[in-house]
Amino acid sequence: MKEIEPSTNEREFVLAALKDGARIDGRNSYDFRTLRLSFGSDYGAVEVQLGNTRVLAKVSCEVIRPFTDKPTEGFLVFNTEMSPMASSTFEVGRQTDEEVLVSRLIEKAMKRSRALDTEGLCIVAGEKVWSIRVDIHFLDHDGNLVDAACIAAITALMHFRRPDVTVVGEDVTIHTLEQRNPVPLSIHHIPICVTFAFFHHGEHMIVDPTYLEEQIKQGDMTITLNVHKEVCALSKAGGLPMKMDQILQSTKIAVVKVTEITAQIQAALEADAKKRQTSRK
Image 1 (cartoon, rainbow, N blue to C red):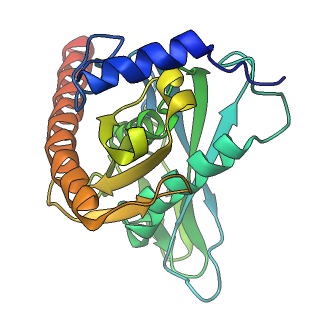
Image 2: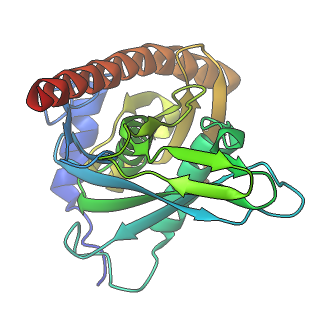
């Protein structure tokens, strides 16, 4: 289905508002929409709501044989699914350019920055390792899928618990959750994506664009950072050329947003852990 483009009146209204330093949803230029995190009954099931954009991430694991050239490294695999339920522009069984872009950005943010300790997933070198799979389902599309998917993926990985394992000689025993408490994954750092959209030939820049703003933008850029101010990835797929001072300004803004989002993720995880502990008692 062809994407329905915004009308001339919508386009002019959004651009005129941005010139006055306002946005149609009442936010300032560098404000994120309200972020909500909710957890499922199973470990590793997280739903992220960023404004009206909703993303569900589910982590699962299995024991497989490692690559021969990396006998002690486990696997981290991402799978994204964009269905017509999220937006009428998505089709079943057909990857859009947007889905490919989101998948690549998540891969860069998580795998290349080595956010997860893959060597800690080794059970028996050269024989058995854990393969961690993150399924990301897009439920509602109202812009900025990348940031929502990144938050969902890293939160789900931090929330997930794998079964405990006992190794005696060549015998490997995988314990059920009833036998032993499950084990959290070893996370080195928390990469967070912050997406910027540019208008008026780069004169105006906003954070966390909505779907309407994405349709009107002249360019965009996604910066992936952690709270240590380390740049994990930077992606800019076409659009307006960027000046160095714009990139530096964007990075400074992103650092503040990453700190806020990371604190919210950690607070939500702590609240869920207390809730589970209380329910067990």
